[in-house]
Amino acid sequence: MKEKTFIDSNIIFYCSGDIGYRWAVKVTQEVAKNGDNIYADVFLFQEILDRFYYLNDPDRAEYMYNATRGLLTNVVEVTVDDFDRSFELHQKYPHLQPRLLLHIGVMTNNNSEKIISTYSADVEEIEEVKRINLMENIKI
Amino acid sequence: MKKVILDSTQPFIATGQIGEAWAVVVLEEIAKGNLEGYVDILYLQEVLDRYYYIKEGFEGRKIFNSFKNIATDVFLVTPEDFDLSYKLYKNNKEVSPRDLIHAAVAINNNIAEIFSTDGPGFDNIKEVKRVKLPNLLEELNLKNNYIYERKNISRS
Image 1 (spheres, helix red, strand yellow):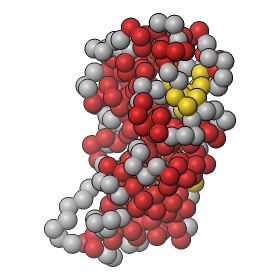
Image 2 (cartoon, rainbow over the protein chains, first blue to last red):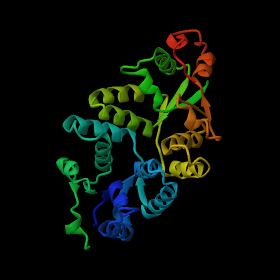
Image 3 (cartoon, rainbow over the protein chains, first blue to last red):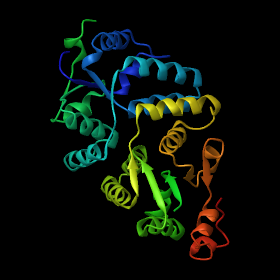
Image 4 (cartoon, each protein chain N blue to C red):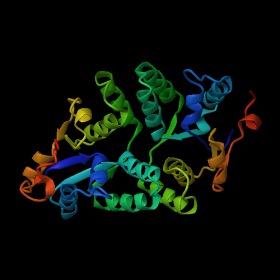
């Protein structure tokens, strides 16, 4: 992956805790190796902290926050312009979640068209970006 | 002038089917410039999320735009804000991560007070002070006005 590529939080959840899929761990290892090209928006941290808080698992919240904070070197802030862009997308895709549209708004405003996500159906519906097929792009 | 950061309880109480007059009054005071009311960017996401899940996505966008314009400023949330929220979390493990990030943004932007009707969360964070509604209305000389005085409403 040499192009600027965004990652969302579902990979992080797949590789952690009770789920712990090996393929997701491999993906995060690839992220660690190719970190210069991998980006995330800052709300990814919020999603991690939210998830483990509501699972009443503070130890894992700490572990996963520290792990992702160290793993992801390119974390971009979310701006009002990103929300404005997501609003344009909302008019085109009114049934899709605001958080997903914000992801795409951040990506397009940061000149990226590629996303690593397991959230396949909805992401693939958005023609402004291309979801990376993990099986084709990462040797697992 | 008094400065506060708002959490997302405010738009939910001021809008839609709830529409409490006191919450609208607080927003009017911000719009008039009598109160500096800041929000952070996560607050805006919470507004959109809520309206999406009650299947009123376009209404959520309208409210989003209103709040974006009314707020004195919208603070970005940075990785450093998350680092601070994580430090706050060490001493406040019962507080939700969203309350902690609002508090961290407030601290990093030198805002000492948070206006929220969500008492249990913010009252536990000793690094910031929650402004309670009666106190805010009193400071704005509005305590005797509006529907807040209804006897059957209990708000802290």
